[in-house]
Image (tube, rainbow, N blue to C red):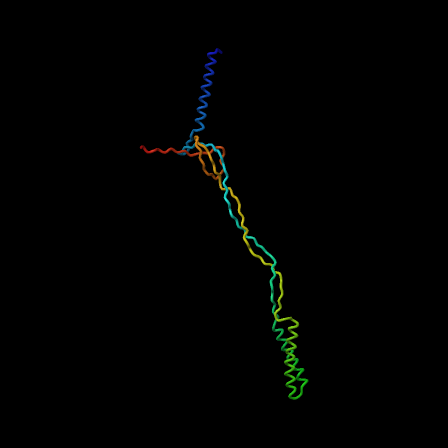
Length: 190
């Protein structure tokens, strides 16, 4: 190969490289046409996740032991029955002790004393007519436990297109490039 031919081949290789370089650059900025819209690709520079705080409330039952005062009433029909029985028994005994007009007085006193003894005996067996005591009861209450949680809400994306920088929000995380819809609008003549 002579030097003239070598120079010619070298020149052709340089020209080919330059043509490929120019066409490669135009391919990067080249727009794609789909369904009546022009699309291009922008370079993603930064992706920042965005979060929002979500409140949740869960019902929780809380229980504890609490002292509760209880009052139990004695059955008064038992006391009344004992008073009646004591009065009858006292009246019979008083009737047997006395004679004549004294028998009537002895019967009356026997009835009164017997009734009182029957009443006192019934109250002594049951305690006072109202009996109170303290017992620990289970007490429960439903409260709501509130918690907060961070939830991913989307992404703030900063990208460049033809030397300018832009920012948008997206629901999903983009890759290294972002598809852009490009439109051309005519400007009214001045």
